[in-house]
Image 1 (tube, one colour):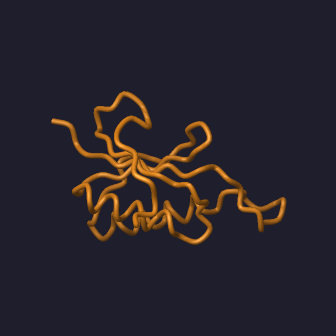
Image 2 (spheres, rainbow, N blue to C red):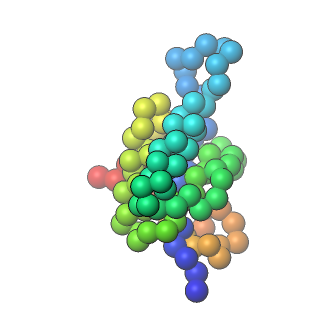
Length: 109
């Protein structure tokens, strides 16, 4: 039986207010830390390490019902510095590739 997974897709836009020597995507660490805290609280699980996929960075969460996972994804999309245009893909752990499933724009209304 397939397990529910929500992919959080965030556009790879560099943070414009940073100096040339500063990491261009500090929001990746912000989301990673947020998701780690969510996992520590037992609300969901980080399903796999995040990774770059084309022009987005993808984070993976599982271990809860769809509404809970989408609410977590929505909160992640509103963290400080996260570029606009994030979306979630509702999928499962048997999907053959990223981005397969139902798209949900983030943050939720």
